[in-house]
Amino acid sequence: MVYLDHNATTQPTPGVVEGVNRAMTELWGNPSSVHRFGQEAKHAVEVARGQIAKLIGAAGGGRGVVFTGTGSEAIGLAIRGVMGALSVTGRRVVVTSSVEHSAVRDLCEQLEREGIIEHRVVGVGHDGVLLRDQLEAAIDDSVGVVSIQWVNNETGVVQDVGMIGEMCRAHGAVFHCDATQWVGKMETRVDGDEASLGSLIDVLTCSPHKFHGIKGVGVLWARNGGGRRVRMVPMIPGNQELGRRGGTEGVPAIVGAGVAAQEAMEWLALGEGERRRVALLRDRLEGAIVTRCRASGMDVEVNGAQSERIWSATNIGFGGLESEALLLAMSERGLCASAGAACSSGSLEASAVLKAMGVDHRIAHGSVRLSLSRFTTEQEVDEGIEIVCQAVEMVGRSMV
Image 1: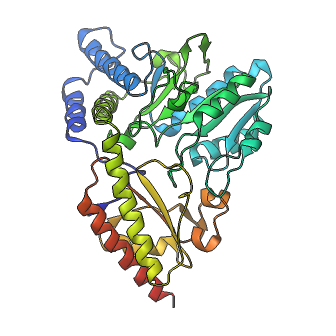
Image 2: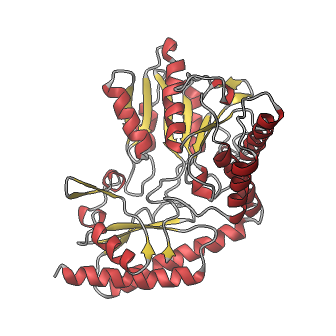
């Protein structure tokens, strides 16, 4: 199997598996229990909280880090919770982009239908980057939360979070950043001096299974110092997790998240060269597929290639083909990939992200996402090139 679907999920490392197993066999007490056995579990949770805080560059040894059940729940708490706390201020507007993950998009649409918020959507250019003039027009003193992802999960396009944060501060809006595809892959410093690394973010959410943790835990960090404290109303009341998320903590998944964070920090400490190494593998994968398919007469485009992209992903569109057919052909040959498309009522709809970017429908319907991790090898990339090109040729022949 050649696995090139790391934006969907990543394989837990041996260290993470070992930590999870230890938590399941030795630390199965309730962290809220006052006896020593329960307090050992609580200590493990607090250690993981501190490891996550270090990974995102948060001061205070974990103060402000909250564990949830999933990344989507963390996003829900960030938006719904903050807007709930701001309800007395009259700020009812949430601003998002047209390329947000469905966890943000669907939630805001639901809250607007329920009459809880007003939802403003900022467009992007063909390159996938936010249109600055639209963002400036959307953010005013009626805005409570601006929720913009750091990296797009489909294209890998990176947004300028420093610029977004400055606009939010100017109007007193809370800046929530969905950093699911950034954290663990790039340096992050929410309490640092450089805005580009996240120092103007007020609430950050991420999901450890995207950087080799396990599923079943999400992370929310909210600013709680420096003269700026973010308040939120819990969606699940309870005394756990700083009073922001009730329910007994999933200790094994949390311990795994902590180990994954520690290992990600060690990898990031190796320097830019390591990220560049994987970026070159991505470029090799992307370049070879595009060159070979174009040589055979195929209309091929890399979606978002004009923009700054994270090293881990490429989104390639094959004109006139269907992504579902391509993915099935790749899977039969042993390659795991994804598409920015969803099958609904038997008809394949083009990705909402690619539609928002204005990608031609022939390209959008035939787009697939290939995503790498820090463990991806040259052999996997070379095998992936062959499989993708074979699948494109086979699907193309079947449509003639």
